[in-house]
Image (tube, rainbow over all chains, first blue to last red):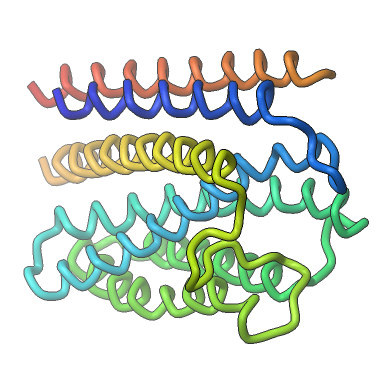
Length: 215
Length: 33
């Protein structure tokens, strides 16, 4: 039941959010129409950060409880987070082409986000290189904990280095107009529902796969 | 492509993604029963 509600919330929020961001909002003064991609880019990036955070939490939970269900959740979160992170990089590169003139400028934000992608890709490579479940879970949990430092680095990169990338979430709140914030929250809600649905389904597949292999 | 076209493309993609999710969910439920 909860899953169905999650699907409905996700579908409706993304539909309404896309409708308002693509058709209702007026073009921006400096960027014109291209700024609408921001309503997809920002929620994708936040959803990927949250997925990686979940990977950290479930990795710690696995090391504490030694329950393989937590390991399934951690690896599912990392996979979904990586997918969302790659999509955030692609949408960011398109935005960058029109806002800064190049698809890729080696901006601190772009570079550190690429680093996050590579680190989590190596997390998945590490997992696929070990066959025994306990060893795989233990080593990847430790890796998952340390990998999260790159996510923190990516998040604070615009604050510690000079960057063209704007800082949206500041101490004073979200630095955007009120109507944009509402649409952004709607899109974020939809992306998070999609993200959680993917993580849950992925986790179930992993559990069944393990069960089949053990039989 | 204008904004309306992009919106329709987005909607088709979203519908396909969620339809696939529901299909996977139902399939998993049948497998675990």
